[in-house]
Length: 484
Image (cartoon, rainbow, N blue to C red; front, side):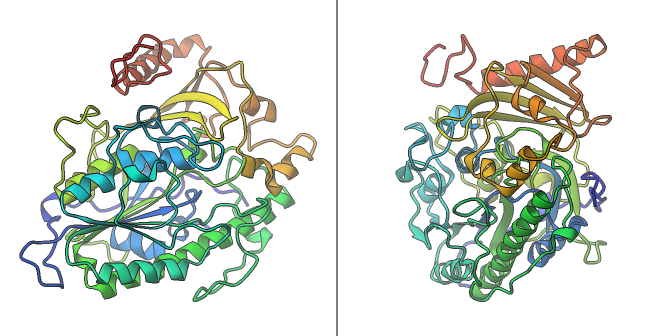
């Protein structure tokens, strides 16, 4: 069964909530209102939720969306784990903050020395800071968490233990806090042929899926091996959702629910060919759910409120700084941050002036170099491939997956509507009319009818690269005064 990925954008009820976002008095005695933050980060979770009509069962996330806001056009600014997380924690694009690729093992990418991170900034303002689960950004010293609870361990998906550790820590706090809970689900496990589904986990009802029941995304072919692989992925998503239910229950029982901004998102697209490690729609279009204390829900009657603003992970740090009232150091060389707070538009359905997002990609693993810069608007997507002579690499976990093996051993198989040849070899520029071609297959960059559109998007991208000090842009001076 195929599903149109744009069928479930929905319509919400607009309400002015910016003025009602003040935090309530803490359940624990305090002279000041608290403004806590719970940032929940999934690993490789695509735009797959039960509340948008999908087959995957995500009751906890669906409930969170009903209590808050689900953004239907939210995008990572890079589709690679470490680079994306570094963007979340710095408010800077990966080509600016130095996290060009993966942090772990031989890849060894890290933030530039003078980058200030979100936990560091909040800690300077008196916040308690903690991380549960996956960090995946280097160096650890720049993130400066007071506590690292339940650090990531190979193949461990104990979401209950993560939730209880978070609850214990929250109950012990007597000052405002930011807590990041970063799951390993639904990332592939070990040999990439499973998703940690080889055993039962404590306090989690195992959700099984039949390959015949999965929804085939538009970037994948309908093959038995792909269906079986997606069924395993669904199970990992549901396990994570069970952990989120435990985590949110712990938040409620801590007494801080009414003081805490909750943000749920994923670092990049689902770990399948044509999604993860790509700046195409399926690689960066991700779930974003925000629940803010005081936000009005009048007239919704227990329905999900949808927000169609085009927002980016570059906006997460400014949003959290806005919520907490914390500002970066005045002499910080990376100011102004390129993103903006989404708090003022939480109650809107279709906010004006939120109609474009930029994206960047340089590396994934150390030997997987394919620098691309991109601009996505309501109508078009534009890609500038800086090294088109190279073959587009594939993340190793995706290359080892049953899906990729099924695709590459089936004569004539495509990645949705895209041939393997066009996936592996791309021109210097790509331009797609999203209203006519949402799967981004028909490249219009060489079509004279679109010459003016191409020139405009090219100019906007070039200006953005200059403002964000892209070291891949010749002649640009970076924040250190070095010319390239």
